[in-house]
Length: 136
Figure 1 (cartoon, rainbow, N blue to C red):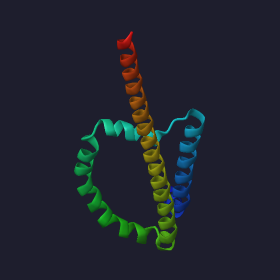
Figure 2 (figure 1 turned 30 degrees about the vertical axis):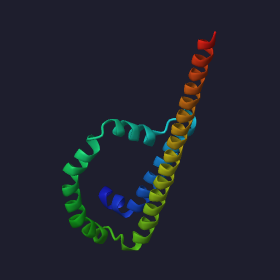
Figure 3 (figure 1 turned 45 degrees about the vertical axis):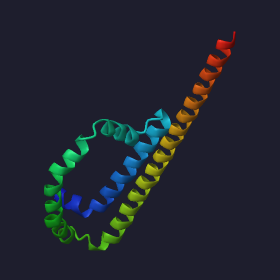
Figure 4 (figure 1 turned 30 degrees about the horizontal axis):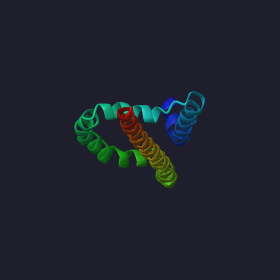
């Protein structure tokens, strides 16, 4: 009985999960200036071989599971009516991730530009100090 109710209300649960995850992510980002996605990306970028290794190990099993099980689940859970909604939700999620990625890339480029400008300015200041210091 509980399983049947869960299956019947699965789209509502998925929608609630997605929106609550977004709410928690946004609230942590605002309240604590904590960007969990950026923290995760930084952690994974420090361990460069970890993500490709995990993807290589998991992808054959994942693709075979998806290939065999998704059509059965769509028919079993009567999700044919919700395919459009699921596509729209997936599009929204991907659009959000792409916009966040662009923002992170822009911020990193700005940090690199500021570092370069500071490096050049410090180098010029040191040259001026060396030049003026040798004249006295």
